[in-house]
Image (cartoon, rainbow, N blue to C red):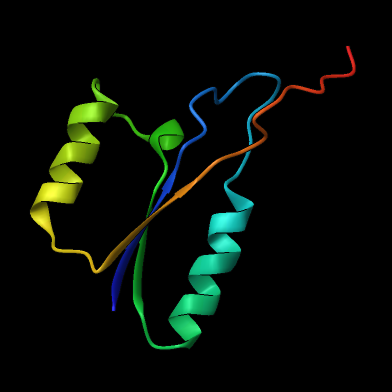
Length: 79
């Protein structure tokens, strides 16, 4: 299967930069099962319009599955 995993966290520097670690773990597990897996992380994109870039990625290939990751939905910042 061809799978695209998208990081949905759009605040790369607040409270600090984060790596989409869960997506990376999932990608490796899926690859070991023989799937073709791509990750799109808008936080490391250099495109001026990440929405347009993501639309282009989704339109360029046919994916069997698209997964969206969410980081914390609440901010339990200790500051």
